[in-house]
Image (cartoon, rainbow, N blue to C red; front, side, top):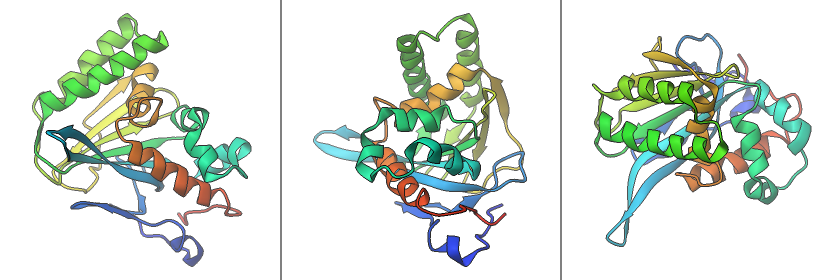
Length: 231
C-alpha cells in the first residue's frame, strides 16, 4: 500500500517520478514493514543496440527517513555537482545505517532467469574486485538465482530488493507497481546485499540516470530543516 504525504511542507519537496509507463510514488511502505520510505531517486536502465538506446527497466531507490540526518553529517552544504562526482557519497548511501528499498520496474518483457543471470554476474564481478567474494557469497548467489527461476516479468511488473543495515536482502515480486505485503525470500549476506545497489549507483553504474537523480533530490532534501515525511 502506498502512503500519502501528510504534510504540506514536504508535499512540495518529496515528489513521485514517472519513467515511461512506470509510476514511482513519493512515499511507500516496504514488504514486511509498517514504516514509510521516501523516494530518493529514480532513473532508467537500458542498453545500446544498433546505434539506439533500448530502455529496459526503471530503477528507484527508497530510503528510511533517518537517511537524511545520517547523510547530512558529511554532505550537508555540498553542491549537487560535488555529490554527483563523489563515489564516497554513493558508498555512504549503499553502506549507510538505514534501510533501503530498490524497485526495478520492467519497461520491456524480461525472463527471470536471464534477468538474474546478468544481475548476479554484475554482483559477482564487483564482490571479486572488492575482495569480498568467498564461499558464503557463492552460496548466497545460488540462493539469489533460485529465487528468480520461476519468475517472468512482463512490462509493468516489478522486482523489489529490501536492504537492511544488518546485511539481509529481502526479495519480492509484483506483476505491477504494487508492493507485496510479504517478502518472497530473504538472503542473509551483507556483501551480496550491498553489491546489488553498488552495481546500480557505484563506480560502474548500470543506471547513470539513477545516480544523477539521487544526487539532485538528496541535495535538495539536505537543505530542509527537520526533514520529516509525515508518518
